Image 1 (cartoon, rainbow over the protein chains, first blue to last red):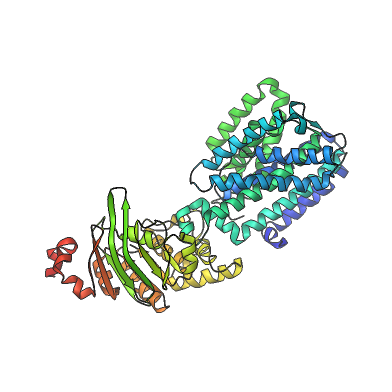
Image 2 (tube, each protein chain N blue to C red):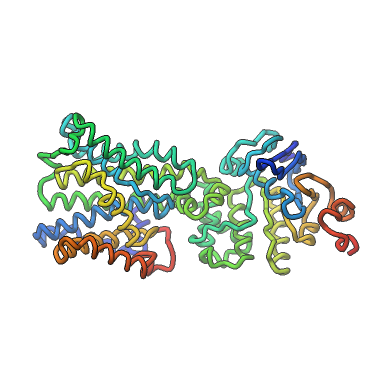
Length: 312
Length: 240
């Protein structure tokens, strides 16, 4: 993994940002602020990994909750039923996400058009029903409670998610700088042209999906640890997971490297503010605001201030 | 012999777009493919490059049958096509577009970039390397189409109307480029409506009409053939 790829232009900005991020919990001991930062980091990873597939490779998914939920359940079931450590559970959760993404992709990517979006959406709904009904194995609607999560303090969760975010962003950045990344963008731009230039389109779409599903699965496991409780309605949620992932990216700037970071910051902070000020009406105000942002900044926050979609 | 096409037929339900066409392409030559609109020229290209499957007939590339191989597979084997309706990767720069082509044979990003730069120098587009493809003029887009295809290092390059819609200076440049590509040792099949250009670059010309081959010969033979004049060139062209 080449460090300088990500470092060349925004080098000092990133280093100082990381420094601040690392010493932050030592200086500020406010748990609520840390909680918000954890959410922002989590949604940055989720947004970035969706963006790799949807923004760069152009394969829009409305059902990433499928991979999120599978990751959460894999880590929790392995831990509560088989005593597998939650640390290796993070990895298994990612692998589980990738494994279930392959058959969905292999079927829907043979066709062009919105088939992936639709089949993943349906798949997430099916998985929710399976986990609900298969109560002997999954706990059903009761859900699973993690008595002893991966780490205990807020600050430890903070360092864990910041570490995961650094790894995820470095991997995605590295993917984008390679042949794979160029091929993903070529898929988005024109599939016929891509095929004529020697790109096996189905194979590369599948690759983008499996990388994306891997990180989404890990995030599912992280979320399960962080809240220490999951049930099928939460982790397979269309609105709170699948659509929220799309929203973070669209607001931040689809197909831009830093878009998801900006998008998740705005989404997390605004939804917290609105919950405080508007209580029950918060979703309404939130929705209206998003419509306004999309109307005036159709390319998202980062995209609107950049002349074009850059490789990274 | 690089390419051999035998009894090639493509029917779209009732409509037969290409009917029992035979021809060969010799290594190192430039073969022109002409004919009126709807004669089946682009369909023939799509069949050779794997975008369409033939209804009947077979295609041999270097003596091996290739029908059924996908376009990327054929690109790896050394057959690359361009598109009549240009397909630039619009959000990428000219250099990045050509890099995508170069990646078909070169895995390393830096080496692909170097090779793409070399190709742009060859096609005379180096000065536009950082321009976003969507802001290029039609002439430059047509040329980018050629640059991208060249970067895949083909042995057989299929150019689909890379001169249509260009002004006379641009056509002259494109003719020069095609001749230069041949000098690199690349065999070309060229579809073109610009008669002056196709006559001057082709070693041989095939004329299609309603999906059938009506003539196969040197440019002189084609210009003087009564059937070709009636079907495509028109009496005016013959008199000139």
